[in-house]
Image (tube, rainbow, N blue to C red; front, side):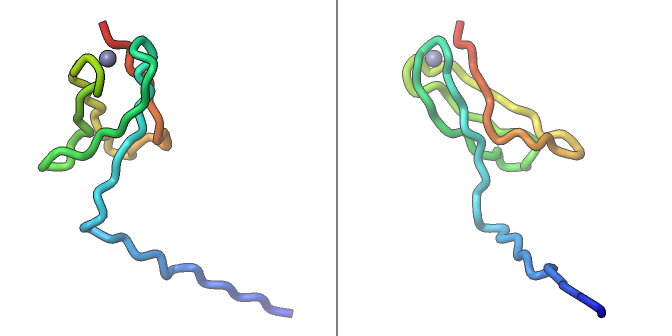
Length: 72
Ligand SMILES: [Zn+2]
């Protein structure tokens, strides 16, 4: 009995902008940050206090899609 399954039909859409979810702990709100132009990091600002946030994209990339920001 042979079972073969191929799941290689995963299309990566280059036009789809990936983002990270951010929990601004001290401001008590949530938001998203998007990739910068060269795709080396996710950047954005806290929607409440405009504190800048930057998450560098590693070579392997962490599996984390959600980060916490502790605004000063
Ligand atoms: Zn904030």
